[in-house]
Length: 91
Image (cartoon, rainbow, N blue to C red; front, side, top):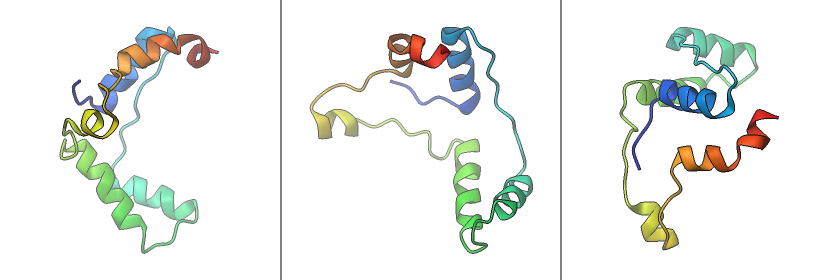
């Protein structure tokens, strides 16, 4: 199991479903403005933006053995999950 970027996930989904999918990269300011326009409380917006920043910087791209340790089974790789659910995703 490996950590994947948003672009890698989009490319994998597109390849398996046969449907185009791409990520749209926006700035933190654009994200904050969109959240504000959607009515999110202003005090919450910086925290949510910080999650996006951390993801973009790879700060949350950590692979651990926690799923196996907690569930007693190996995690399903994203590619395998997508392939098993291709019909539902492509529909």
